[in-house]
Length: 335
Image 1 (cartoon, rainbow, N blue to C red):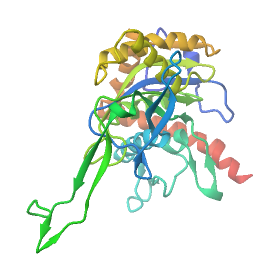
Image 2 (cartoon, rainbow, N blue to C red):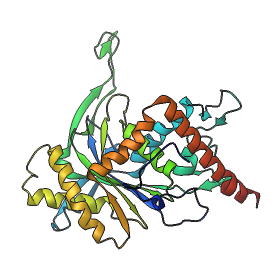
Image 3 (cartoon, rainbow, N blue to C red):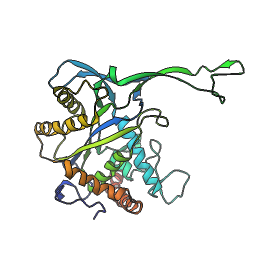
Image 4 (cartoon, one colour):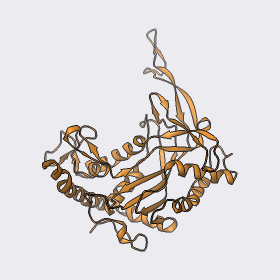
């Protein structure tokens, strides 16, 4: 029994697995989101913003250069958010803390049994690996690159607030492209072999994570608007297809001329195109939206916003992943 209680009027009990299976069983939960930049963000590789030249829409074949938000730009901050909560609530620890707790250090030393390791996966060279149960793909901006970025100069000042001291001028001066506020990145996060705890854990990470990309101590604010959840027996449409469908809907409504795009119009059009996209995916699905979606999110946040309930939830989740680790991961090593 989990502390996360979700009425069957919202989601049938069969949508969740009781335990994490050793072999896939075709239970998927897809969290549909619109990621909105709320400050000047930087999603880059090799010093330049990531871009892609793709079709404007599903109907509009003319190409458009869009900003791209790669998978790790999405999942890494969300993993770190969850790992903070695990440490804060005594599930894991850093290397120099109490020996009785799990020592787990992101990309340094994976404990192989905590919720982060089991749900998001890990790879330790010849020492073992666990495939991620959280699928994320590159997200693309609805608007084009030209209207979605701006170049800024930067410098590093001395204590007195100027660029020179004792006759020497700092050389730390340059320019960098930033993504402007109110740029929208439709995104589908898929949870495979979903349990009640894995769903709540990943959703909580999505709702809590507020900063993405480079320079997150100074900028990079981003808001994740959850617009739907789909439980299905297979994978559904891609981020790119969702983005292109929203572009077509905004174009048909004459709403693409707005700069920046209107948040309400983006969210409403996104919700409108989802049913048609799902109907073409060839899967059996349960689409949770509207009031049912609000109730579903409330079932999770009621627990994750209460300190005592959150600690209980994380302990239950850790027990689930530890049991899986002992039954599957560690047993595979012994063979």
